[in-house]
Length: 436
Image (tube, rainbow, N blue to C red):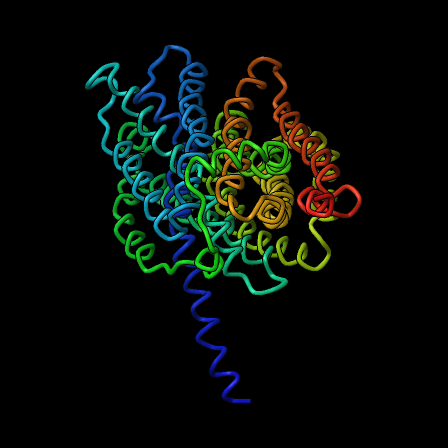
């Protein structure tokens, strides 16, 4: 018995280490994404000056979204590279590109200093980050799925998303410390750059962790790795699975960007709460997101992906408007925290199940490309568009609860796609395999 235990211990430790090394790049990506959203007002003033505050904010969120539009491009180009070369080398490349974007945003001079070149440089940096992020999440998810123990794929892949919550937690703490130690005017003028500088300092540590990654047994066991052209062709041939995967992932991305990236702006500019209150809520959301992701993955391993996805999407669709209407009718810290905790539960449990679902429905030989493309489309066309859409809806309708319609739209897509994918109790891939 003692020999069995001692032989299993190294495997358990190595898997825990592999999870930490693989997800470290997620930290940098989400750390930077969150900071861009939280300091959107300061960034808008620094790089996109306008007499109209809403217009400046929309410009900043527009650049945030344009960067996300590069995700599908990165998913196809870098996804094909990872499916051909390997998971380990691909994840090192994506981290390198992401790091460049982070450094550029941290050190870019303001519009007042270099004029129109400033927003152009920031846009290029966001495009690089979007290009990298297009495959980062997919590459990490596939890596975790391929090292998972039998029957625990959902639990393992959930740590891709859970790891991002650590970044939001750290970024929220930094933001809270800044807001407490500096006048608001100083933070808006230059203090907002400090967390970005911290991100630059973290980069070498993450590189060290990524370089110690081992290739997955599943990839090494493949007798033949497809060429880039074969990966592209196969990805296009499986366009239906990619689109359905995108639809399933939309609720994850829209809810995530609402409760993390947009919440600080929503709390400060719309609900008129203090910066400290908005940051504290976001910090607590990061903690609960981290908890609910593995729970969702583990529950879906036991009950199946379909019931978990349908239950959460249905709850989100039904409760989004009542919850936000109740919040905006008389805003308070307690109400914002309550509503955000509800959405955090929806996001975490749904995301944990969704990641396992997405890995399972895409073809194995182009797993990284198809997974990344589906998720990149969901994030680029819908998720990262959430702050922009929410700001626009409130401005146009005058209804502070109107962002709920965007969340309800994501829930509706999730319900439709889940019912289609799991029609007859089998996934599309399983049905097509039987038919063949």
